[in-house]
Picture 1 (cartoon, one colour):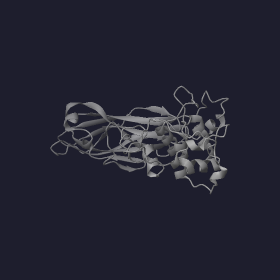
Picture 2 (picture 1 turned 180 degrees about the vertical axis):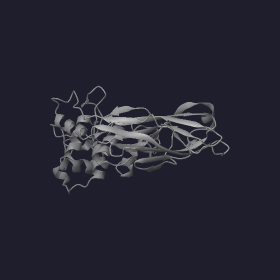
Picture 3 (picture 1 turned 45 degrees about the vertical axis):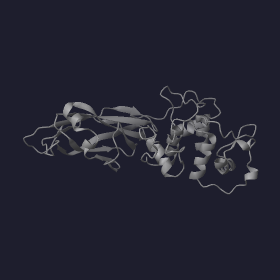
Picture 4 (picture 1 turned 120 degrees about the horizontal axis):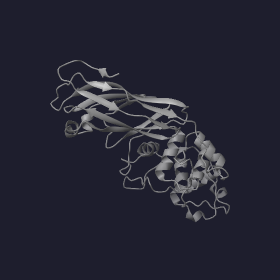
Length: 319
């Protein structure tokens, strides 16, 4: 049922359509908000509510800045939308994408429905600053997430990491691919590792701090891990999110995040230690001593090698 506000002589109708989708625990969900408006509206104050027991709000996309966003779970308040969309945009079309909201289904989410709905519409003005009245918000299209129970990946049976994969997927820390596979031997990117790490810790998304992550899908995760001081980037305020992460980089992130007991470097030496970067040496020895990361059958740590998804699953099961 449309909700009508103060009656007056100017009739402006605004309709927000957000649709419906399905997801599993740990999965990322992008919710487009489509605005349908008569020409003349220039700013609005939109309130959206969502199910914070099943969903984590990660941010907004499509050039929409977080500036001005009032975020107090489970409410999102978007004031002065004119700061995102030009007058020309609002005055020239009747339908268009207002923004996209990004959520992650919490690992603890149970099967059922989660809501994301338009909760209120405070005001609307035209480009001259005059109030427009009789504004109507159509709430007939709500986002309903049907949270499904986790599924076992089809390619994990018989793999050395099968038990680890089962544990991290059940917990929603790592997810498989749309085709039902986990692809355990695939390398993992720095952005993907950041997402896994933040899900494991349960941290809230941060605000992008690197120049090359501002529009990246994982910017909230990367910002959260940077806020902890666990990553410093690769220089020049860049993070290289799509580069593959190495084993010594993972060791360093773990070392900066968790407390480790004192260890004797001489008792934790690897074959080929000369390959370990000087800045990662203490981290490598610490995670080895703690049993979180191990070497290969020849006793080497292979610090410069990229980590696989199976290895990452094992790490987050051992912590």
